[in-house]
Length: 524
Image (tube, rainbow, N blue to C red; front, side):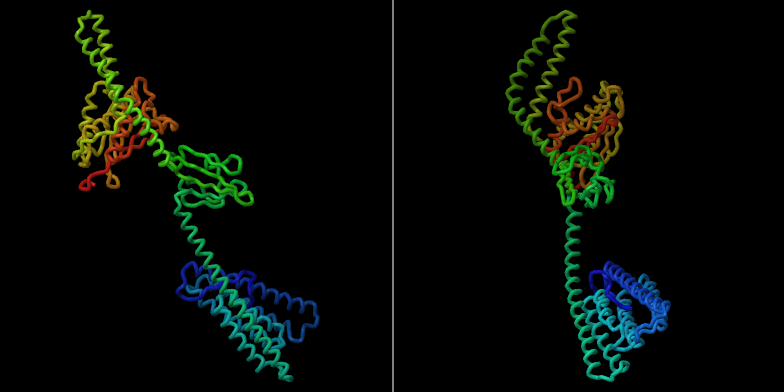
């Protein structure tokens, strides 16, 4: 049995060179086609059964007892088709077999039940529609030609030709109808195929664009569940899948409407700064745009720090000169004074404070100046070994144990050895000062992506998330007696060497500084 299913027409050429997706689509259409033929055969079976059961006179051209074996044979062919559609490697061949079988079945029904006067003659154009559904314009035109020939053969060899003129007119009308259906169905199938291919191309291009966007896109339904999300959004929020609640995204539970907010401490490593905007869509839906602005905010903070340091540098040039000269005179005068033992203790206190003020002024001056590098070839591991050995002999930090790895590797870079030595010393000193009761400091050197990666890890109290962006700001410190200039100087020197410094920390879990330096090509 053949007829057009109530689905939209969509054609594809049933060739053996089809792509897997096209074959899968053709198999799906074949299954729908088989299902529709099953419904049609079942309708004929019910009709014949009602005629037999009611014992009423059927149309002269329809014998209910003959219709039953025809339906049974149709069921058998449908069963074979359903079995073969999942197993055959080239569904295009099965499509051609289906269309040929349908034309032969329709011809058999017409021959058995009255020839050109049979009520099954309309199944000829229906078979053409089925061919258009399965095989597009080529199938529609080929099926129209085949069914027209079969219809003419039925008229010549089976039908009653008592009135040849009338029979010829009927046959010509039916043939014309078959060809007209073939032309119209083929044209519609061809246009729909082009539209479908264009739609798929647009969808494919759009999917590629969305998946390669660095910004995350999420479409929410009116209940706040995720309808769809691109790859960037799923990377930023790993638990985000279709159907999940958008409560995984901080701040999205608020009132609807257009809004924008920033989230600190998000993403897979909980170290991202995200800018999230929400825009209402149709029918209560909403679109979320999630941008990773971590680098942007870091650059902005770094620029603000540079501006403050430059301003402080210009101010400190004259101020340092005016302060250091009196401090030097005061220190020299105190050392020349003849004092009692009790006054000598007071002098020691004063000298120590004078020294601290001198160091503070020097740091203040250095922090406000761009580092002037005296470049030479520096072996990084050797330099780190020297600093760690010196630190290990400092009795003030005897309770701090150094644990290191990779320092024996030879990584060369062009840099200022003195300033790099001061950077590493400041980092070790910073780690030790945050562990007053002692602990372990890790110093690890590896090569990664052609760069030297240095990790300095302490077991201190850690840094709260809201303070992490501030630790390189000048004069920011939480340590009693600290100036807040050490890490600011460290960052400036590292960046002057073309490197990068980052920090990872959580309260109660210690702190890790990560430094990257570009290596010479020979060592990289």
